[in-house]
Length: 144
Image (cartoon, rainbow, N blue to C red; front, side):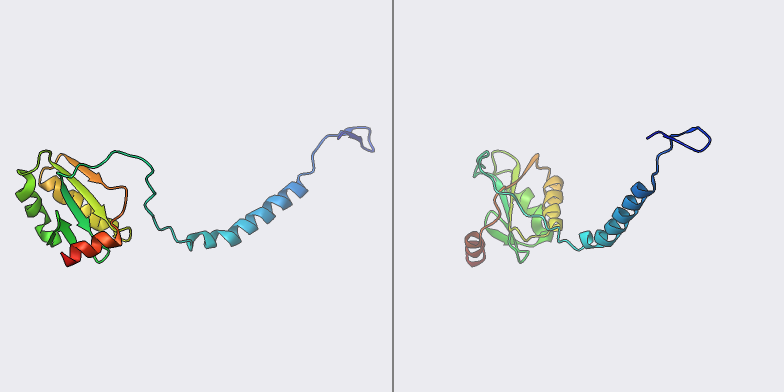
């Protein structure tokens, strides 16, 4: 807006005080709200698979229950025995592939142990199953 002043000059400056007030209010609001973002639970859940490639059954299958029990092709083992067990069954497989099927509540560190064991046993491919280990499958493994 151009306005004439007393001396006949045009007043061409913009008043930014209201704009600054708005920014300060928004800054205060964000400072108050920001700590609540940290308290949100960021749990990772496995997405549902609608389609995909079927997993062949003649692979080394490592199942991990929510209690942390590990099974290689239905045989219960400890995490320390995992590399040796994968090495032992490697020759009987057509393809050196490991399929990991775990409960949705299993910690990622346990999955990493399986990945490291597969790498140490020189498996060429590791497949993480898209569907988590069901309660029925866990019950069959622990009972069988």
